[in-house]
View 1 (cartoon, rainbow, N blue to C red):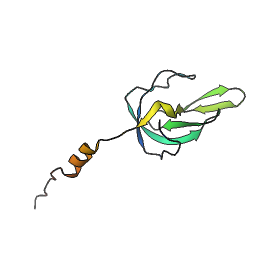
View 2: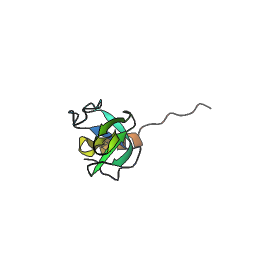
View 3: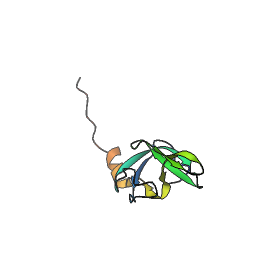
View 4: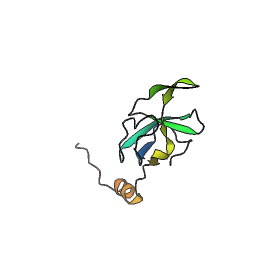
Length: 98
């Protein structure tokens, strides 16, 4: 699960895309998304708003019209193995032609 302190711009991967109380919202399991912001949920806790899926609104008594985000538990951080990071650091670089 991602943290409520996750900064905007963080890439996360969807690990659970089953429809919830307000539908699935277009989530795909295994897809990578960008955190736009973390917001307080109306029933306590937090939700994540994604850059790739615009939030939608629904009428929910007694609060009225509310924006819908996704539960944090549906996502994990996108971890890049250190072996791949090392390859990128030591990859040969293109030389500029004089």
